[in-house]
Amino acid sequence: MSLRTISSATALALDQHLLSTGSFSLDQLIELAGLSIAQCMTLLSPPSKSPHILIACGPGNNGGDGLVAARHLHHFGYRPIVFYPKPGSKEVYGRLRAQLDFLGVPFTDDFEVELGRCDWVVDAIFGFSFSGPVRDPFGSVIALLAETTKPVLAVDVPSSWHVDLGPPADGLGAAYSPDVVVSLTAPKECMRAFKGRQFVGGRFVGQQVADMFGFDVPPFKGCDQVVEVVAVGERL
Image (cartoon, one colour):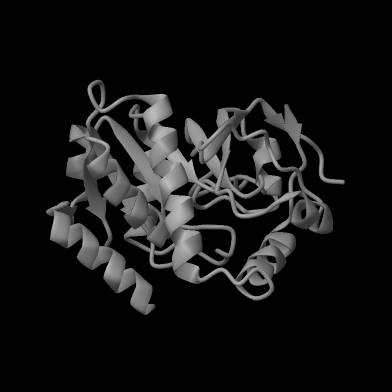
């Protein structure tokens, strides 16, 4: 099926609507997003086939999604390892990190070494609110992701891509295109430039809210938190 895309401005307004009128907490949104990412990994490759998952987390909510995904992947039987060089300042991120420490999920300071050892990579560095230049160590990580032959799953948008315009024309990120993207709630406009496998995750809203913000609710089955879509359509 083909889904409509939403702009970065609409994504921000939707996020604010969920936190205010929808009465969601930030913790809830991050938890549901991270669960959908982990479930998507089970659909892509079971832990018996690809147990070693390297998760690159940024300092914002996208990184929080990655931390939650690591916890669920651990419980699902994978062996995640987390690269989290710049922890976010919000209290929720500290708790998510502590939960992983409690389970014994390891962290690494050397992304390149672990990239050589892993079976899959999760790009949870930057989300729809990112703007500005990419600074190290994340610039180096994105350069490695552009070169690796390991399969990559990106959370919401591929890191370094412009949320509305897609990959940069040149420079850092121009050659980076992950194998899979899990869009949260709705595909962002940059997904019109993406040619890999596309999923939608995060069951936050019903059709009434979707109609209000101009996007589609995909046909989730049963208790699934993620659904694969064939392509995304032009924004209306």
